[in-house]
Image (cartoon, rainbow, N blue to C red; front, side):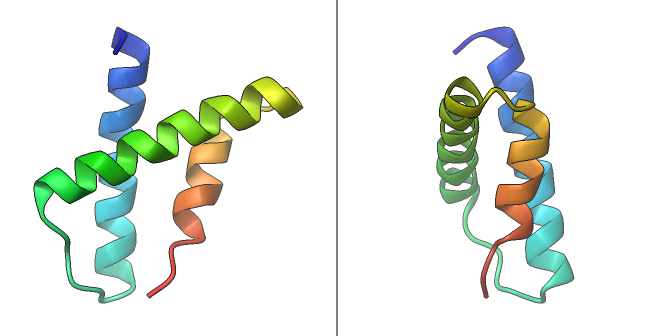
Length: 68
């Protein structure tokens, strides 16, 4: 994984952690958080390629839609 994607993954982990805390949901393990963040970043890049949108805004939207 490249430097930029690694940074996006780290940011996605922080966003996920914040959302879990905000919604009072049980926090998954670090490995699960990293796996989820990687999936979100990959999906965001795929969506950005298809629709020509900003990757970071897509990541934020996907995490904001986190369901309890």
